[in-house]
Amino acid sequence: MTICQNKLKQDANATSKATYEAKIKDMTIDSALKAKLTDTKYPDLLTGKFDRTKIVVAADGTVSGIDEQLTSIKDTYKDLFTPVVSGKQPNNTGKPTT
Image 1 (cartoon, one colour):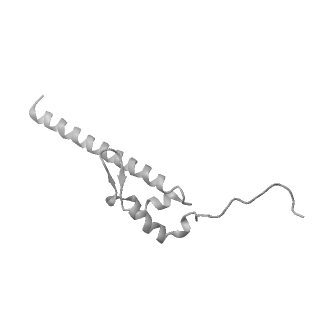
Image 2 (cartoon, rainbow, N blue to C red; image 1 turned 135 degrees about the vertical axis):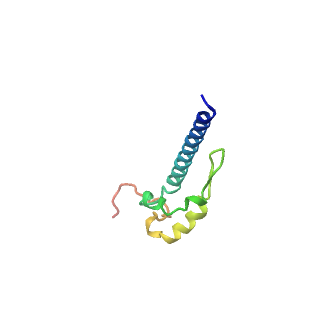
Image 3 (cartoon, rainbow, N blue to C red; image 1 turned 90 degrees about the horizontal axis):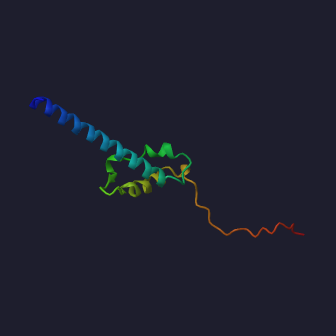
């Protein structure tokens, strides 16, 4: 194997590694976004509203930068989020009232 062929294989390996790492990063971000959008009516629609360049995946797999964007997205698209219902459980004994 010549030096030129060896260099080409090293470049191909580096390209493959970079592509693989980018795919893993995208899958990690997608998973984190879906976990944060569980209270929405259309999570797939809202995932496109996040600026992925501002989302950081650390070496240990933790994702940051989603919560900051989620606050403004919730304000902008209020109707796509399930409202928080507060109150107490009704006292339903099963007996009709007279």
